Length: 175
Image 1 (cartoon, one colour):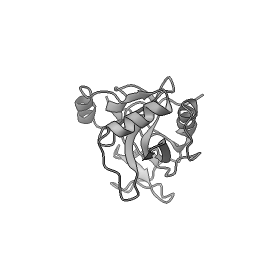
Image 2 (cartoon, one colour; image 1 turned 90 degrees about the vertical axis):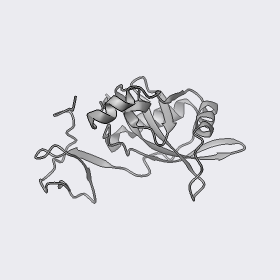
Image 3 (cartoon, rainbow, N blue to C red; image 1 turned 90 degrees about the horizontal axis):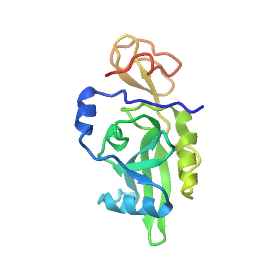
């Protein structure tokens, strides 16, 4: 059974996001190409356009401008995964080039990849087959900070406390 992630970020971001539009639901490759074009974002030096994404609890991919908060993209709801996608646009359509689980609002596990793959498969999009950058998140039991584990070093960057080996955001949720 897939894990549902609830928003675990700062309350002020949740409150600001409550009035922002939710990400666009993507039901086809054409939808994805249209959403990507509508971001009005210039490609990066690699020619890629980035977007914020979530996979909602129904397994539908939602995308929004990269500057959007994940909680806004999700309409404040639970998600199966969240992160960033990088696209290459061409005359023939859109290609998913990179996908990360980088979302400090939901802190999804790398194990949330199957939800992303399923959402992309459902709309007929080729994808990299995995997160191209996996981020491991933990909540520090000592200071409560959301922390990114780097190079397998499970130590809080803020207070120096040891971080748990297992994902631990359900133990203490911000309201």
